[in-house]
Length: 308
Image (tube, rainbow, N blue to C red; front, side, top):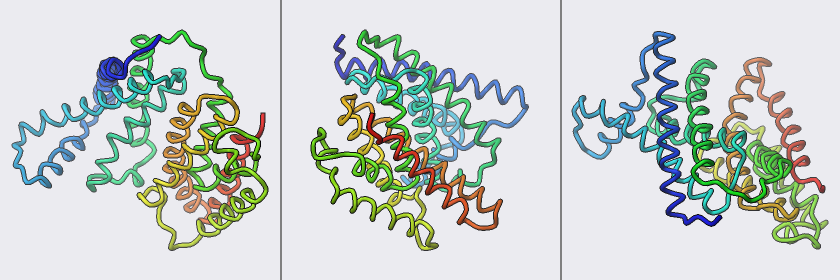
């Protein structure tokens, strides 16, 4: 069944509204059960944006604009998901739900971090659970609603292809060149698409040297954080690109694989920073965590790119 992009946007927006209602219900229930104060971060975001724009917003309007901004975020993420589904990107709820939850978390927490209102790197485990659980509920509700609104009788994507894409994305999130190097080392000139252009002995040697150089540079104190723009963008691009290249090589949906690779790269980048920080506190040095991450990135790259 063919669906126009506009229909996908509208139905996705409606699914996002349903997900937002579920998120708000879970958050309100948590406030009531734990008798904790509601977060004022959304109001601080609106106030900070208004201040930068030189606009004076009374407190009463801030209290109204904050939930409206949250609703707009949820509806917007749902609309984007609807447009992707209309374009043929289909995910099972067990995968698409968490990915939509992560996307909503990034859209909500990104401005909080960028405006200096809160630093997610300093959040406690309970803070992360408080933030993650409602967004997971949002993602699953939005995706399930979207599947009902945009049914597709076509064959579901292979689980193995989804796992490959996630592995390559996560490898790239850990080491930006890991996924691309794995594609180059497992591909040949006789393959299809990008894999044919990056495959071969010479390209494999170059890719291996670049990956080794990054592994060394990663241990240097002067290396910038991977969650900053210069570190995050290459990981996102290479995660999506390597996942799409392997999917095309193996005859799977390259667009879907690219989306999964992108999400996995972003998630692994953030989680890697937290894991390395925890390892540093545990061992008194960053090196054990860095070496463990080297090994994990190599393993994920191999699992994602190995031939079927």
